[in-house]
Image 1 (cartoon, rainbow, N blue to C red):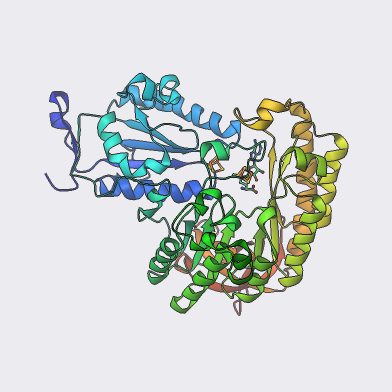
Image 2 (image 1 turned 30 degrees about the vertical axis):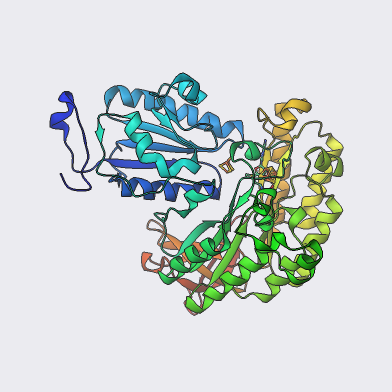
Length: 493
Ligand code: SAM
Ligand code: SF4
Ligand code: F3S
């Protein structure tokens, strides 16, 4: 049997030998999950699996899940019902779950006390694994399906610490842009949020490891790197990082650290900016937490050529009492000042945010403060969410989810209407300007391509598939609510 060959062993499967088993990964949630899926894909490829062609059902389907809102979990449950039916037709199909819904790596064959509750409740799934256990996925698969003959010993070291799985070299989905995780988990404990429970405590990846991954990417032609984490600007500053040997500045007396040491995230960005000599064009990061967003980072935006003129800074609510109940630990006035500082230092930059409507106890008046904040701060784009109670969070334990569903919906629509107007007004400022666009995809039916400007604006213009992965100067002719349109400079329609 070839190294990449696998088969199902056992009398009933003898004649089912196939050249290679195929996989597909369904990814939900944030950029971190998209990046994690690229690592899971790498492990599967190393174990001999191949990505299933779009027109063929896969032998192994992995759901990389998100728990941020109930709706996301319900979507997974709904899809799994279909998989239950598919498994009745194809008993060879294996289904696994990872991501934020999973608590304990286990299979149907694990002893009851070691089984994740999902395996008890959902019959369609064969195994679950914590994303930090991605290294051991091959042995989880072998336990889930003993008839599966592995092609050989997988070459992944057993994980030592929680960030070690990030050492897996990803199977990147793009050659010209990449998500690179800088930290996992979160220590902020916003009262509504599941992330500190689903992803665990905040812990940063060693700086050298991040720089090495980025260097490899840039050497292979990557033009844009997006550093991802829940609160990237607290990179290297968490309590767990302070115990880590990777961050020697932590052992400096505070006074020394303050005067002579750069914040770890600032140092990381400076190191990565040097990769422009090898061809890196754009550096982005998301998300920042307003509490850790300071003047050093603002100044760096004005200084580093690769750092894109775009800031995603989640506000969540424009009312101080709601912010306090959310445990965000800043006031609206403090947030407004940070945005003003940023806009002064980086003229023409875009600013985007996240807002939640209908959080516990939110009154009409408090909601109106959020509407006013959107009007005043003129965000270019907003991710609007209706509050969804998450079991296990402080809010779920301590505050009643008392804003009725219809009121949440009304508030969401009201805010969305304001956003559409504000976003159109912001976009109109780009008409007549020339933006640099990194082309991401081609729409054969319209004969157009689309990509993002350095400000993270979505731009569409006439062009062919050969432009994918290139930087183009585009003259903006039209501004729509969520989109800019134009033509390549010098090429009129
Ligand atoms: N770490 C980022 C921050 O604090 O700014 C946000 C990351 S979180 C994964 C993405 C967004 O999901 C949050 O900014 C928030 O708007 C939204 N979110 C989190 N928990 C939520 C909940 N229980 N209900 C509704 N939206 C929620
Ligand atoms: Fe969740 Fe708050 Fe952490 Fe963001 S900062 S991931 S909203 S707990
Ligand atoms: Fe969702 Fe987990 Fe990200 S809960 S938003 S996938 S960190």
